[in-house]
Image (cartoon, rainbow, N blue to C red; front, side, top):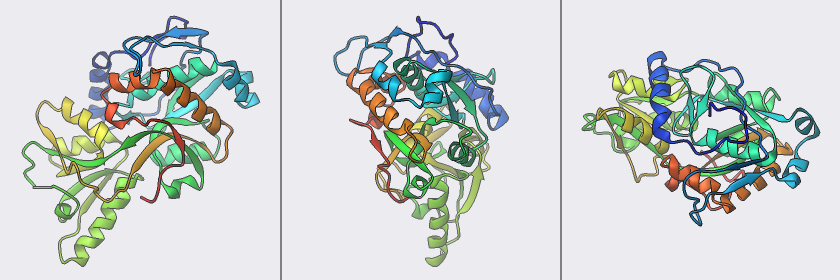
Length: 327
């Protein structure tokens, strides 16, 4: 969130005040460029707004000295963590039109984590999901708050601290003129996906199945980000965008009646889906994040943030490490 690092920092911000400008920028540019680091507040105390998930109170966050002591020494010395994002995963991550700020549920969660841990969290945007994951593995970034899809093939290089669940569906033109209801009805259609993501792998596998079944192959269109993919559907270059239900619900709500969701209630090639923060393999940050997110769940902060951004259906009762299975 684009707010100063002061003890008066509050969260979560009202979603309606922050999303329109960010989305407009991303849609016009068909993506968001690299952002310089943007600091998030580390404060001694902060009071949330709205009702907590459990008791309807305003949870007060103070630095947890025990959790702070678990941070790597270089983090405690510098007093900051660098979190990388893809900049285009609303309502979780929304890159601001100023090219510096980050808003959304993930920004609110990282603000809360920074206050709890007593550090600043600086946000930087990378060019695509592969750059995010390889950058964390290589040590260029400390973590990604995410949430990023947790799958077995990604766990060999990185660890996931899962804090959300997800479903995968299609965003299509209003009225669903191509009749896309599930993977089988995607044969022969132009399907947009995010390059390097799990949905891309699933739709490419489905394309092979279509050919085996004597049907036309799926015409897969891979994009670097979500806004570019959704713009392809709105402009008629793609018949559908295959991706996570939470951001697609957001995009549909912003499309002025031009789009709708299809394929809801279907497995669509996935088992239970978990998403979370990402750190380098066996990083000490893994356990710090696990304990910190659990504390935010227990005091109602997490539920408050998820509710504010329309993500209550995506909540987990408790976080977990590497919960994801095969894509």
